[in-house]
Image 1 (cartoon, rainbow, N blue to C red):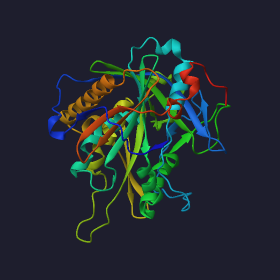
Image 2: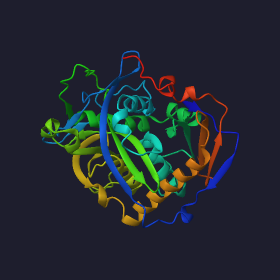
Image 3: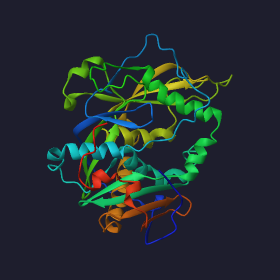
Image 4: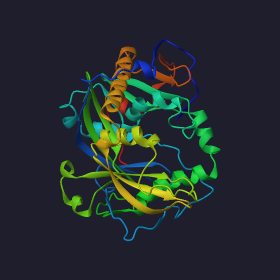
Amino acid sequence: MFLNQPTMQRDELHVNLSSVIADQNICLEGPKRLGYFSFYCNAGNESVYCPDQSSLRYLDLPNPIYINALQGYDKNIKYGLRRSKNKQLLRWILQNETIVRNFTHDFICSNGVLKDIMIFPYRSYGRFGSNYGLTSMNISAVKIRGKIILDRCDSTAKKMRIDVQSERDNLSTYAGFNLQRLITKNNNHSQCASGKENDSFYGVFHSNIGTHGIIHAGYLDCVESQKEMDKPFDEMKFVLIKKHNAPKRNKYNEYDETSHPSKYDETWWSLATLAGVDTIIHAKCEQGFRVKNINKIIVSNIIDRERQKQLLTTLNKVLDFVKSIVKVENQYYNFYFNCTNRKLTGYMRIDSIDIIIPSWYTDGQLPNES
């Protein structure tokens, strides 16, 4: 789904880096694991939902470590376009109403949306450099049966940016995705397993922050070893897999073999924290996107406590604002943050909610099996 920049303003909140003072009492209670689902894209590029662990993977590092992360790369494909996972989460919620009703919540969304809310207000200050390339963020909101469903609204500008991204950026995006497949394995015992390389495994969680309860789903890269595969979902130890591209070697000073650029800190901390993961498997891609070094990063050490509190305070503040604007059921609201003027704007759109919420969820009826 791609939306142009909004034109109708109703209310606005000015968000400024210097004005977001960390609330020392704020904390994220959770995430508590509620369940999981798998999905993959079929030959028609349609998402297929699987209510099982068929896409669950485990870490399987080669020894010695020497990985060509560009295996299978197709220069004719532009990588990096994200597909919304809300449809799968909403289906899980309808299938598991007896579980969901035990957890008070105001919001339903992906971990990616929560991460964007936490870190996007700080991206234009230069510490992240120019590689992000985006100066605005769009999030849709619809209240259905008293719960506010949030989702990304990727702008036309972002789609165009991916279409014209450099060859190196395209290679880097592919390498990040492909690396996860090259150092993990899947038992694929379930009949629902796709047997494809584009399947994904998601956890569904419940968390509280401030006065807000959230049902959220996040991509779980893999468990830390094959023996974890036989444990109950609640007891599995998951890890995230992340990579960064090493700078060119200097003949006077070779780069450090294990460090990672600080521009990734907030992103990695946010995604790991929201998924309840305490370890990141970190790979450095050298020139040619070859990996010869992989190390572990402890999530709690990525950013200091004050910064953690500031990001959580920002999330709480934005959710407060969204809740104050989204009052009417079954109406489409948009929230637009512009890094240039530091304003978050929320307003009601005239569009049908059908473009962002499947009709079967609005009706409270499960769709036909895929």
